[in-house]
Length: 141
Image 1 (tube, rainbow, N blue to C red):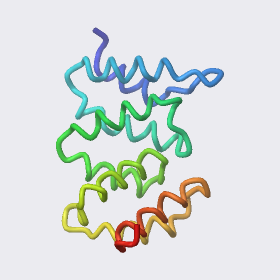
Image 2: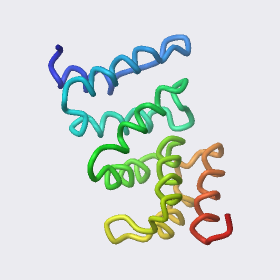
Image 3: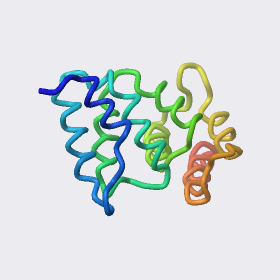
Image 4: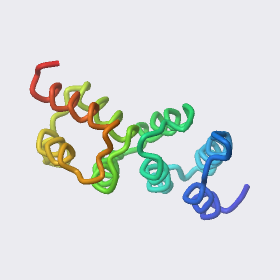
């Protein structure tokens, strides 16, 4: 098994080749097999942030489901969304709201979503996810 830091380095430097995300899938599998996935949460969110309008040809969904099993991932999710709102980060937040959760670490998700709506790096394609969150939090959807 390769050193944990090398796995993280490779994840942080990953770029798909000709639309092929299989290497990222391999790296994520290697991260989980290392026994230290919690220590790699930053690298996983970094992947989402570097490709904010992408789901990595489905690879990011596996990463998302894995992240959701880690303790206290919500704090890192909010940090990630603050740096760069991403399709996967917003999907994770929608899933949290769907569970009936309305605050994280004492911070209202309504306030967070209002801030996201005005985030300077929010892409047009991710604006609809923010609007879904607003509607859900207002009890409309």
